[in-house]
Amino acid sequence: MYLSSMLFLCLLAGVSLVSFLIMTFKDFSYFVEWEIVSFNSCSLVMTLVMDWKSMLFLSFVSLISGMVLFYSGGYMAGDLNMDRFMYLVLGFVFSMGILIVSPNLVSILLGWDGLGLVSYVLVIYYQNEKSANAGMLTALSNRIGDVAILISIGLMFDMGGWSFIFYNDTSKISDIGGLVILVTLAAMTKSAQIPFSAWLPAAMAAPTPVSALVHSSTLVTAGVYLLIRFGPSLGGVSKFILLLLASLTMFMAGLGANFETDLKKIIALSTLSQLGVMMVILSMGFYNLAFFHLLAHALFKALLFMCAGSVTHHAGGSQDIRMMGGLIYIMPLSITSMNLGNLALCGTPFLAGFYSKDLIIEIFFSSFMNEFCFWLLALATGLTVCYTFRLIYYTVSGDYNLASLGCASDSDYIMTWPMICLGAGSIVGGAFLSWLIFPSPYMVCLPLGLKLLALGVSLLGGFVGYVLNLMTESYQLSSLKNYKLLNFVGSMWFMPFLSTYSSSYMFLTTGQKYHQAGDAGWLEFYGAQGAYSGFMVCSKYLQLAQDNSVKVYMVMFLVWLIFITGSLI
Image 1 (cartoon, rainbow, N blue to C red):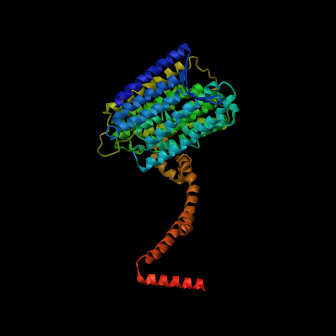
Image 2: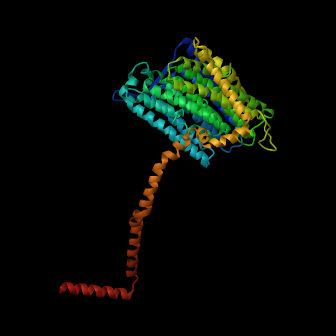
Image 3: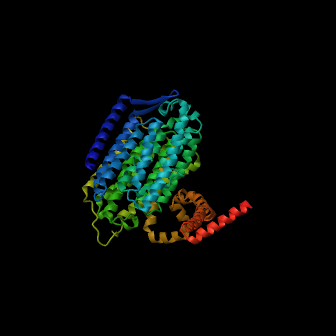
């Protein structure tokens, strides 16, 4: 099953890549439209667009999905519901494919809702309480974006159609009040920007192959891709709000990852940080650059999750990085691939992340923006290197301390081959994409101080991350003095609490009071239970009257006789 699915997706990736090259060099695209129904001069159509952007993204999604499915053949080998898992992943990829090739809000909604539904089913795959809570948080957070898309469809009815690609170069979309803000809101929920960030680390309850797919090229990138398509229509207040919230998201995720000990959640927070980078550069109008970083990020992020899955799968199932010392000696391929992905994430020359991330930082520094967002981006860049070196330290140095007897190794070739393929992509993918997407490279002129700032904060972040972990014991003991502050920073600024318990507390307590005072109080006493008691008493007397007792009949006859006599008198 997984082999045939992988071959099909790899074939689709090859066809999409060839189509992208042809469309790029010959400068053309296909626009296919089927009219379903027409009313009030407004046509409901199913629309597909095949241009260089959709074909390139579809090739990456298909390639990474094929690698993930092949990897799942080893990771999920002992699962009793292997076929169901494969069908769910294929449904997930199909939904993402619909969203990629849809320039129409109605057809986008099919893929958008499909991603939300299948992601919920995959998050609750292991069917325990933690998975159920995480799945509900994921589903409800994404439903906010679904409602925003539905309202946007209603607002676009005035335009006579829902193919926003026709109106991007005009002012029509921005003229419709609230439409751009609603689309931005939908993208923020899908891409987990503040205040909708809590669901992304919670979704780690899903199997690791799902995490590799979701956090690299599908679910979390759907919001970024939607804004890339809507790019020319963004402006004004929506751009400013997006810039501010994306900067805060990037900083919050980088800060939280430095205090996290769960391996998968650290990588999930790095995804959140990079989504913030994409949204920041999107809010400044550089849509192709955000698309470039989206594709480069997909390669090394899928690699990181695969390596994390290989480590947890072969090393006792533990995800605590404090128990993973010295893995380089027993799992050299997995740890080398993981560190390769980590270095690409940091923007190390000349890996995949360098070409996009360095360009984004330099263009941001040379653009017109407020100083607050400037320093947030600079600090977030340093924090990325800091938690990356912290992760490298815990997985490479020290002794193996997961168990007294272990059998961790890289012997499962089904899991290692996809890592090798994506590792090669993490090395050459950035250069390859930069040549294809930007035939004429950006010319960025900066003062020497700004030019060296990104390098400086990166080196400083790496140094701080390494030194703090060398003095682990004293650092952890001293951190207990500031426990409240560290708890605030390490818990994503209480975002999971604010998204779950605090938002439902008022409604749940009010409902409990009404239940106690009403349903379980006077309403129950005088209502259902009171009526039941009254009927039982009446039926008791009726039953007594029907027991064929001579005494009862004589008493009833006497009462009747007295009544008749009284009426005659």
